[in-house]
Image (cartoon, rainbow, N blue to C red; front, side, top):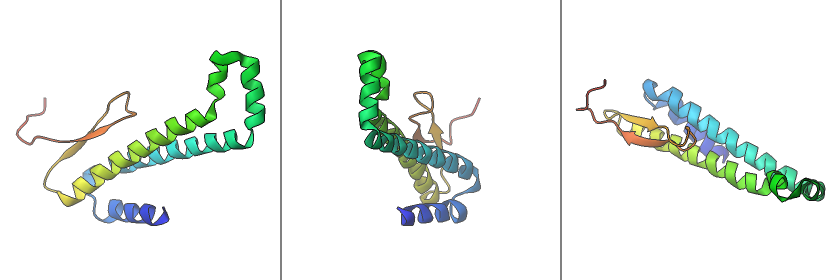
Length: 125
């Protein structure tokens, strides 16, 4: 993991075109934070399972579902991983094809962005 972070940081700083740095860094950082938050949810669930079960039984099934931190672990680590992969995709495409333009397209409120090639013949309005 440390090697991956070090190599990604080096590519961003030394090889990524300036116009893409903020987008890649922002998305990669946000993905890492979501992943770490999911990991924290899992750790709380692992260490306080008995207490959380008591809270769930008190709140009932509808509100108690919010305390199912193992489910939140899957959601947040999945979203975080997806965002880091999207940032890595933009990074690699921008480094390998610097003459072409790529953009991040936000979808689902920015939670699931995807990378798309910008058609250079298309006029911006």
